[in-house]
Length: 293
Ligand SMILES: Nc1ncnc2c1ncn2[C@@H]1O[C@H](COP(=O)(O)OP(=O)(O)OP(=O)(O)O)[C@@H](O)[C@H]1O
Ligand SMILES: [Mg+2]
Image 1: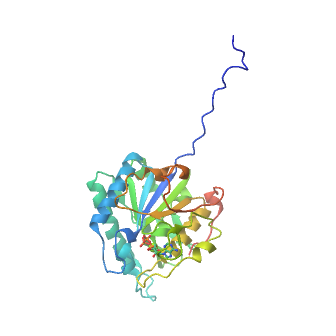
Image 2: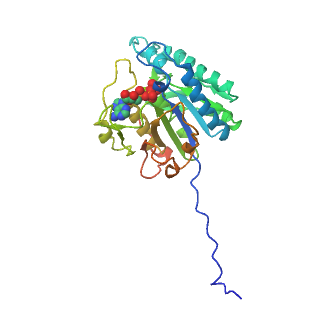
Image 3: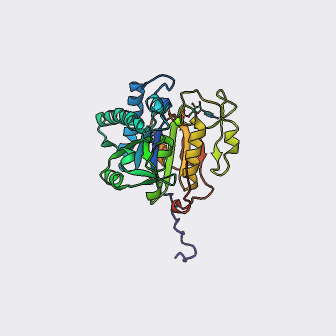
């Protein structure tokens, strides 16, 4: 007879981290030549929309899409009349066009995609976005895919402010019950060392110490209105300080399955370059209110 001490001790299953809610941003630089005017590459949109559709189908209600404005968005806000408090309204129209282009593709692929005008659900209060999540929550509950973009948002004084797509990635944080992950796909594999032809990305950044990354930033063309990689770092570091795990990685229209974006980083495809910005320990999203602009 086997004594209780000899009996095999049942192995405790290793606790799996909860699957994060994913905010996937597809950068304008992947589908648009920002130096040209009103430019969008419909074939590229179609290719990325297929990747988004696969993800949305396999994880219904577990992700939102944020689309960069590209040349259409940047072109709209390049010359705004500072005397007109509603000058930024042009961005609402421009980015709605962009959202619609993406939504049309996603609908063609059978996805319940709904473009949401951020200004209808979000204002800036002391510089911080305050987001009403009723419509997004309902949409996610029915397995739909919110399609968001940069927009012009009303501030405390009644002025419309440009609110770029990198900032949009964090608006749902205040309502997020579980872990929230932001993946920003762009035309570089992360924050590069050694200039535009550099081959090495900075793999990990603390949101409280971006100095090393800033030293490696280079200037962008005059067409750029949101600070390129510098603007992205500011936005993602802000959301990381409030608890989001943020990644910058290169988009590829021919990439296969992007499902790894939902999984812990140590399960990602080997050797995939990226930059991760996350606090050493997950923070309480409600604990770190701060001005973002
Ligand atoms: N050190 C750096 N590492 C990587 N990219 C950098 C660096 N410094 C500047 N950049 C620029 O940042 C760009 C990526 O930011 P950009 O805002 O253009 O991307 P996007 O998110 O795809 O576009 P959008 O903001 O229009 O949606 C790169 O194409 C590169 O030119
Ligand atoms: Mg940008």
